[in-house]
Amino acid sequence: MAYLEQALREQHAKISNDGKKITYLAVNHTEKYTDPEEKVRAEFWAELIYRYQYQPQRIGEVKVPRRTPNDYADLVVYQDDERKSPYIVIECKRDGITDAEFNQSIEQAVGNRASLSASYVGVIAGSTRRFAAKKWFEEQLLGKA
View 1: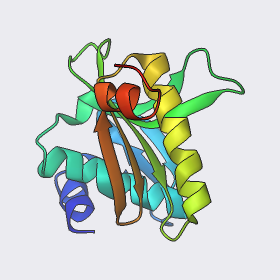
View 2: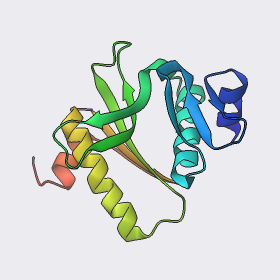
View 3: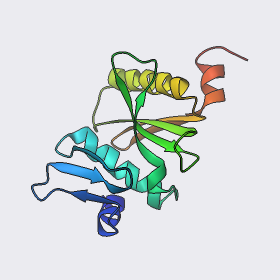
View 4: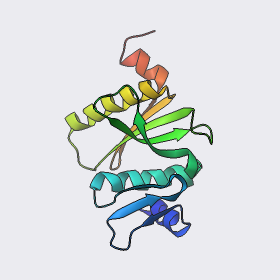
């Protein structure tokens, strides 16, 4: 929770007085903070800023085109301030999900990465993390050379 605490102190995000909502200020996006998945997303969002040095305005939730029903990528890191070139697509899940749920999350993240044409994909479920480059997924999972 240290990264999120720093983001709150430096006003990159704010949690409502009742603790039920979190707003990511750079992208003016609010979510239900009482959701365990949102807590995972919020902490990793802040880690992207402080540990990996991504700009807050380049990170956010995005509706994924060509996915039904309406699917949202939990976190997309963009290469540009205009948010036109997705770099990393990340799916966030609550801690303690089953292996089957984690594998389903990988499939969702890979599909979202493909729809958004990002270079990298990741899944975060509490402290469990998996990241890969597009090329690795194509070679390992899809059997392409």
